[in-house]
Image 1 (cartoon, helix red, strand yellow):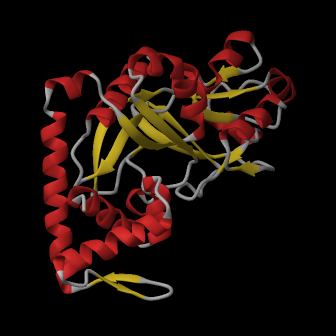
Image 2 (tube, rainbow, N blue to C red):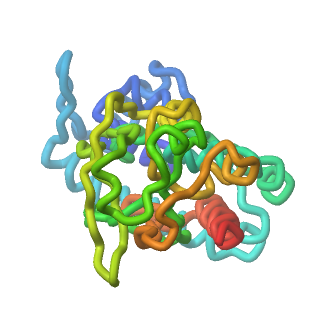
Image 3 (cartoon, one colour):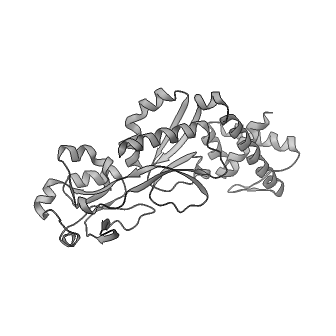
Length: 298
């Protein structure tokens, strides 16, 4: 029995709270995961998990073994990542989650560059704006924008995004170009909502060194960046989003920035990963590469 593999499988089963989900994230048949855990328990001569049809829970012995597994596996990862050859040619599977806007505007157009630089990294990209559970869903790291509130994750700052307010020329022809924040009373906005941002009617600005929030009415709200931009291009109202997401449309004149002298403060972008995991060579390579992309945005 490969005891290191058994520890990895055991850890993933506990994190996923499911044999099936653990098998999916490990790329193994569910029967193999079940067999590995059974052989591990037989080898240790203890029961590690209490199993029922709907739930998995650790036995007291399983909790102690879990702590030791994490220590041992983290030490192995750290030792391997410190080797010169591993650092020069990182490899392995890396599961990353990120917002759709960042993926489409920044990451996906540069994937060929990443592949040429790191041919041995198999990159799995999940795209959504919700807050994923890294442990349960088997995600190695996530890219997130804005202030961070989850102290259970380690954060590495990647860069910042400039946010702008813009609209289609057809909308501005109809409503006029706002010059001051008070003008927004006569305007409407396309609203954006997510699982973490419910107040889609609010636009944010900076005026005289202070942050100012303005509620702008609207007739439609969406939770997907591509659709949000499409509605703005149709003249449905003002939009507020990262400049990089609409750089092409601003350049061609399909969108026009307004209130540029009252732009809100840049929004930080961070890479987050679980605190009990060392930054693997593959993850470090992805983080360095992504930070390089963000440095070119400004």
